Image 1 (tube, rainbow, N blue to C red):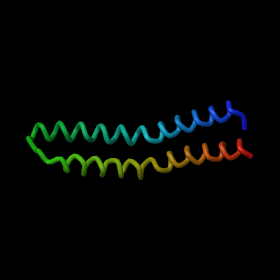
Image 2 (tube, helix red, strand yellow):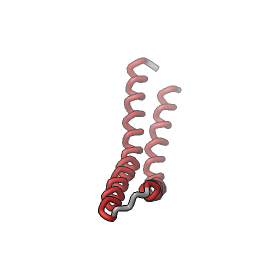
Image 3 (cartoon, one colour):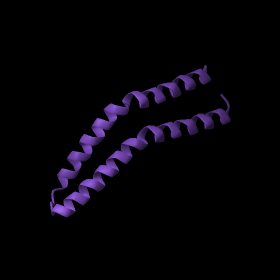
Image 4 (cartoon, rainbow, N blue to C red):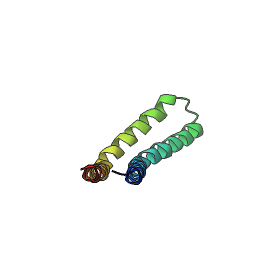
Length: 85
């Protein structure tokens, strides 16, 4: 395996990891902002409330997109092992 191939594989790995993790990060950010706005509107000062909703939303999203994300990671792993051998 040449250095250029190794660099290309590293680039693909970073892109795939960003694509798989981006929906989860976006979900956590959106839920955090919405809960923060609601807490400020209703003057609720409980920090654990935000974390509980965020954890639940992220958990449900991981379940929902696990097939898609797993397929992307699996395809990359197959291509990587084919390039090595």
